[in-house]
Length: 405
Image 1 (cartoon, one colour):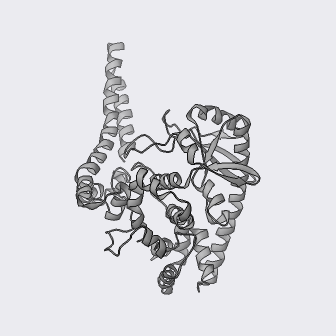
Image 2 (cartoon, one colour; image 1 turned 90 degrees about the vertical axis):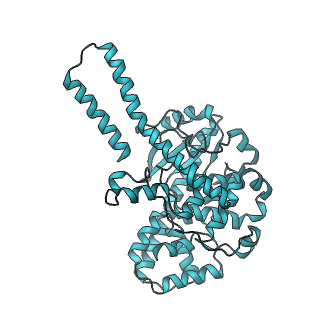
Image 3 (cartoon, rainbow, N blue to C red; image 1 turned 120 degrees about the vertical axis):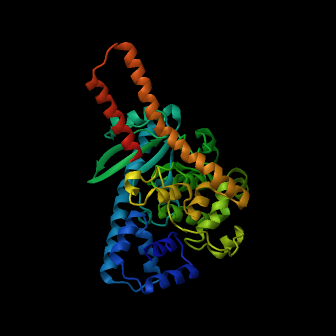
């Protein structure tokens, strides 16, 4: 019952049907300690507190106090992150570099009535590709430390930047594109294209820019639900972002543009209704009919390569293969935005299996690269000791083991 409670709270503005569900779910609920842990993990603590206070729900006082403290902590943390964000934008502007504020850092200042309602794990901004490296260097010169964790040279964002401000650790990511260039492959949006529909907002007296509503929705959906299979699973705060942006900005959204450029997004919006019910006016706009819910509503992908084989060894091979090639129906529709039986069958039996095989091929390349390296080594060194060969074989096994397991 933990996730149904969090699901219905994934929105800013409540309505009678949603609150009736929340009351029903909480009526016989007693796992309050677990609820607050999952709420924090899903970025939902402040919104849960917001909705509970709105309807003055009867809950254990200890839980209410803990939830309030969580909300106040995010409120204070966000104040510091906003201050850092403003400073970063000023530094970039002074160097003639324009930037877009992405995701939570933008939404907590444009959509949410209080910044503390939208937790931020890090601050994400996007700059033009040609300015990315210079922007990174500017941040390092002004007190940030770059992460030493290796990432591909063409990764969609540069190494994370870290700084501690007023005792709060801050993580800044400079993006040079919105999405990575790997399966399921994304409709990339160029920096100049994004400028056309960008929106400005006030950030403590500083004019900042975010993506337009349509592009923001597309980015939230793709980043939240459609990232590569090895990436972090979606969080309910992303559901809250999408639902709230549509409900709060309905009249400002260019629906014709959304339908023309991003039909995949329109396909998945009815699926969110199974988590937190849309307001009636949005249900009518999206032409949502009362249908049988897909199986596994709210469940995440639990197959390989998301879950390492070592973590699934107790399942047995048949179960591992089933979870990998036949994931939950709701997740499957959200991830691939399937519509109709033809689309569903093609994706289920062709597109998704080939997607998994892409990851098999990627990890298999470790063997190929190893053999190429070995061949070159043999050309350079006529004779190799058995110990040297064993050492290289050990390196190969460890590398592949880490990737697969």
